[in-house]
Amino acid sequence: MLEFIGHLHPVIVHLPIGILLLGVLMMVYQHFSKVDLQTPISLAFLVGSISAVLACIAGWILSNSGEYDTVLVQKHQWTGISTAAIGLLAYFLKQYRKLLAILLTVIIVITGHYGGTLTHGENYLFNSNENSKTSQADTLKTESKKITQKISNGSDSLTIEMHNVYKEQIAPLLKLRCYNCHSAIKQKNGLRLDGEAYIKKGGKNGKILVAGNPFKSPIYASLLLPLDDEKHMPPKGKHQLSQNEILIIENWIKSGASFEDIIDTISNKEVANKIADKNILDDPKLKNAKIEIRETKKVAIENNNIKGFENISNLPNPSPISPAIIEDFKQENIILTNIAEGSNFVMANFVNVVPFNKASLQALKNINEQIVVLKLTNLPINDNDIKIVADLKNIKKLNVENTLITDDGMHYVKQLSQLEQLNLYGTNISDEGIIQLASLKNLSVLYLWKTKVTLNGIEQFKKINPKVTIEIGDFKFQKK
Image (cartoon, helix red, strand yellow):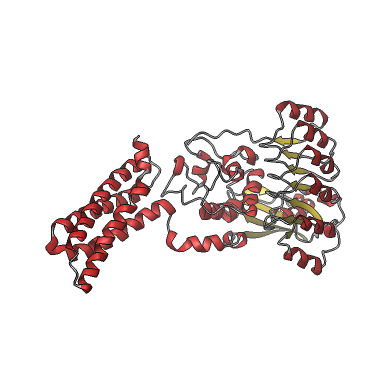
């Protein structure tokens, strides 16, 4: 019961604000119009002060949840109590009412500011509109603190570059989308996301991060839930993450969810081995960094956030897409993205194709050679539409989550001989459908969360194709 009363605070708190300010406005009107409004003004200050007291009680109960910053809560509480007290003084001390009305207006503004900060985060007045219009590329634009160091051994040299995916991409994204409810100011459900230790600790419902497995990490999996689901994050009504922002979090978790600085060795292994006896950590800036010696080509792919295509070299690099075709795709709001520097292979994303025009799928035939990733998430496509996809011979990753495809559509999907990753989340696929996919020799990951597939069906699939990793999202959420 007390918890319910506490949750009424955001509703009750608007009553004293409106009623007390109405009393102040009536005083202003009375001053200029010379109309006697003393009775309604007194009533406004009395009713407003009483409702302010009720709001203070509900707010005090809510603050005991421990989800808010203690210092800021205390400031909000005392300014709220002051609002109620000054309102009562304005009711009783009519001879000082003008001065008290001015003071009351100021204290209401201050109290409202602290309340807004607790609810929406710092700088809520100026950042909300900007954030809603900012593209993913702009929101994640940070000063990349990279250190480059060259080590020479005769004619050979090794160039080392350090970066931190968490600091450069994940932390700015969490700050933009999550800190309002999960930071030092407010810790909804006991969860903070504003630091490594807090993310690793999790919240009242347990761990939120399983390194290497996005679908078992609630910090990621909750982003994929239907918008109306009470466990979906951010909650309905808040600014939602874009597909690209979700992909950034997915790739970070898949790659191990590292919080450390990582050194990329931009060189070939032969050169690296020649100077392996050098102490490359002499520089104190690199002392605690994790070292990863990788081929230049692989580094280029990973720095573009496209994971899982180490074997793309088995396909000859196609010719570039003509400017005319690129312009046609822009007209259809289909996003084309090169998957790696120096490569003509692309990802096609239909996230902005609203309303969806099925005829736009036909345009994919014009980039048959170049397309290796296709995202058709949350679209009303059916089994007949998948016929077109079946003709795209180089597809390696296909996302058709939350679409209308059924087991019949798997007859066409299994024709994608290069397919490595398939996301069927939220579809009507059953055991009959996935068995058809067991013949795909290159398939490595299959996402089946919220489908009709059973554990028995997965076992049968594994008997035929045991090397495929099947994700069914078997993490558990707790009730809030």
